[in-house]
Every structure is written in C-alpha cells, then in structure tokens.
Image (cartoon, rainbow, N blue to C red; front, side, top):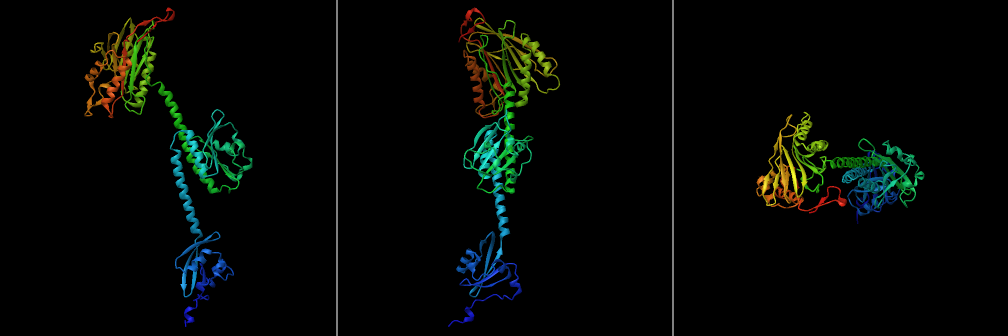
Length: 539
C-alpha cells in the first residue's frame, strides 16, 4: 500500500512572505488542474479561480496536462507570458513571467527592420530609372502596396496640367494629366509647394474631390497628403488613401510615409534634372555634331567621324562644307580640323572654331587671310589649346573639279587618281592658335571624273593595332587603302577608310578619327528646268 505522505501534492508554503510577495505570478496546481495555491501577484491576475482552466490560458492548461518541464509561452489578452514549471511531488508551480514589454520591443524591432529593408528596396527601385514617368509609376505602386490601399503621385504643373500616376493595391499604375485645383484637397496645394504635411486627422475623407479617388475605390476612411521634397525645388506630392473599413493612419505610419516620400521625391527630382540636362545637351550637341554631307554644286562630299570614346558623340575632330561662298555662288569650302585634346573640352573649342569659320565665309576665297583671322581669334591668351586645319575650296568646271587646298599644321590631303595612283597635295602651314602670325601655302588640284581628294586627321594614321596591337596604321597603309578606292564614290571612300582603320584598332584605345572625301563624280550635267540656275549632275 502506497504511503500517502509520498503521493500527496507538495504545496508551497503560503506563509512564506518571499513566495507570497514575489513580483512574478505563481500558480500551484495538482495533476487534475486544481489550483492549490496562488501568490499575491497571481491573485491579482486571476481573482477567485479554483481550477487552472479558469485562467483563460489554454496553452498553459495544455502544457500542464503534458507534465513537461519546458518553458512555454502564450498570451492572456494583450499580455504575453513565459510560464516556467517547477515540479514538486504531484504538483507543479507555474511562474508566469510577464514578457509583454519584451514582445512589444521585439515587434517594434521587426517592424523597423522591415521598414528599413523596404526603404532600401524602394530607393533601389526608384533610382533604377532616370525617366520621370517611370519613376512616378514605381513610387505609386510601392506606396499602394506597402503604405495604403491606393496612392496618387502628382508632379508640378506643366502648362496648367498636373502629371499624375494613380495606383490601387494589387493593380497597375495609371498615368493621367489632371487639370485641377489642388487646393480642393486640403494640404495638397501646400505640399506641392514643399510645405510640411497636414496631419491626416485634420483631413475630412468625405470632403475629398472625385479626381483623387480611383474608379470604384469606395468610401475613404483616411487620407495622408505629404510633399515629395526634391533637390532645391519640390518634386511633387503624394496622396495616400485608406478604405473606410480599415483603421486610420497612425502617427508612426504618417512618419514612415514621409520617409518614403523623401526618397521618392529625391528620385523624381534626379530624373527631372537628368531630363533637363539631356534636353540641354541635345540642343547644344546639335551644333557640334558633324553635318550630313551630299553632292553640292556638282561635287561629291562625304565624311565620317569616330570620337575617341565610343560612348561619346563629339570630340576634337570636325569637318564642315559650306556652299555659295563666292559672288557667283558656285564654289564650296570644305574644312577639316583637329583640336588639341579629346572629349567635351575639345568639342567646345571645336564649336567655337566652326562658328568663327562660318562668320568668315565671305573671305573664304583668300585662305591665308581667313586662317590669319582665325589664328588671332584663338591666340588671345585665354586658350591653351591649338588646332590644325585644312581648307579646300571646290568648284565644278565641266567634267572636272578644281580645288584650292591649304593646310595649317595639318597632314596634307591625299589624291587618288582614276588609275589608282595616290599623290600628296603640296601644301603646308603652321598651327592655329599658337603664334601671333602664321605661315601657310596652298596648292591647286584638278580632279578628273572618279578621282578623290581625301582630307583626314592624324587619328587615322596614328591608330595603333594590328596583329600585335602596337603597330600604327600609318600613311603607307592609308595610301595602299586609297589605291583600292579608285573610281569609288566619295561616300564609299570614307566608309572604307574608316572601316579599315577601325578594324586595325580592334578594341584598343584610339584618338578621334575624321575623314572627308571630295570627289569629281562620273556623270552628265543637266540643265535646270526652264533653262535657269546652275543645273545638277547625275551619277
């Protein structure tokens, strides 16, 4: 027969003031779940209970029935507890440690980690494109998915219309141009001007104008309007909408929305600045790009240009062809030059030189005078750069083309005759922009039908490449290439020379390369209709 003293539950000494007054609730229960003892903290937590099931902690009852010795965790209302079992005999005392503050801190930490991760991902997505419309779409989609049920992103007005993007959670962004009065939504007009946001509790959702709400959205329960700060000027405004069956925005959610808006505004501002710079660059670059050449006055002109850096469109080499520079209006001036340096700095000086030459066209029949005036313009002490030039005045005379060619510090042009012979033009001169005065001498050249005069920059002959990668293309190789271009049209000549030089370089570095071909075409002169004008030539 069992000893009753050994099987009876061991009950804590309730007279022990240390146990009774412990700040942690302690509940002692037998195997049947009958409560044997409670300390003062437990009586406050569970007043008048007689069984463990009356605590409302099903998770604790289940753990007690299992008779395990592991710590279990669960909730009682909004409180969180960790229950530590202390077995003694047939009874177990559960010490209930309140972990509510710890859980709240952990939950807050998790939320902050999630928000930080979201802001990081959002920044990457927003900055993934420098297109303003695309950036607005990304901002609207992210805001609708993570911050609200719907979002409206507005940019500053353009011509009285506000570019906007609307997105509903789970949907695709929709672009629109809104002709609206932003002051119809309180706080929106101020947000578009960059003023601090109005707290959402001040905004009446029922007063929201119809253009704010997406189609079929339903009743609005809460609205947030926040500015999209940009670089120096506001980038727009963000409107967040939450449906009526959802809780209103909390202060923390509004603060988080402003953090997102700061990133979205920075990305939109960067996209707008990029678009403005691209527009300015395109406008300025149109004046710096090589012109498209064609037959002019019965003379074929063709050019090709390759900048030193393949990602660029302009550099230090240039060419131009100007028509009607004499009183008769039948002589053209071809110019090819090479400015010291590469890239944008060289291109700026190139633009200055081309503009100056255009202004001096009225004296283009005197090459030496034109070059001296250009030299005085450049040698003003403010420029440390110089330029080499070759001028070629071309006139059609019957079936031939008469050229006057003058070099200024530039490699002399090469003439390829109809029989394949290659000659060098007898012209030379000093650099432009270095000395107060320059010296130059020109020469006259006659091109028969099918013959070409090639003007080129040193980037062609100094191009390094070949089988070993360090040999220059050289003038001999250029002459040999031209021999094969006899009787070819001007466009075919420059295309072949540029192609051969590029193949020689391969993937290696190179200087700017420019070629300009002047060809006497094979063809007949046709009188203009009505017997007036200079006529035209056929191939």
